Image (cartoon, rainbow, N blue to C red; front, side, top):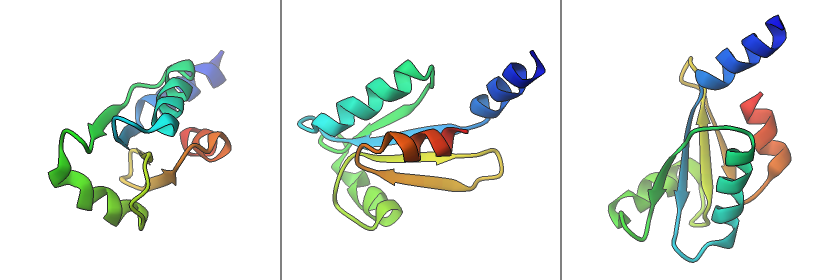
Length: 93
C-alpha cells in the first residue's frame, strides 16, 4: 500500500504541459495516453497561441508537435517529442 501512495505522491508532484496543434493526430494520442494513466496536464494549442511556438521550439529543438514537458518537483524537465509511450512512461515514473 505504501508503494501505491508513494507513486501517487510522485505523479502529483509532476507538472505536465503538452504543446499541440489542431490537426496533429499524435497530439490526440499523447492526450489519450495521459488520460489513461490518470495524469492531469496543461495544453498549449499553438494554433490558438502562436506566440508560444518559439517556447516549444526552444524546449524540443524542433518544430514538430506534440512536445510533452514533464517537470518534476525539483524543476527538472523531461521533454518528449512526438508519441513515444515508453519515454512518456519513464518520465512519469
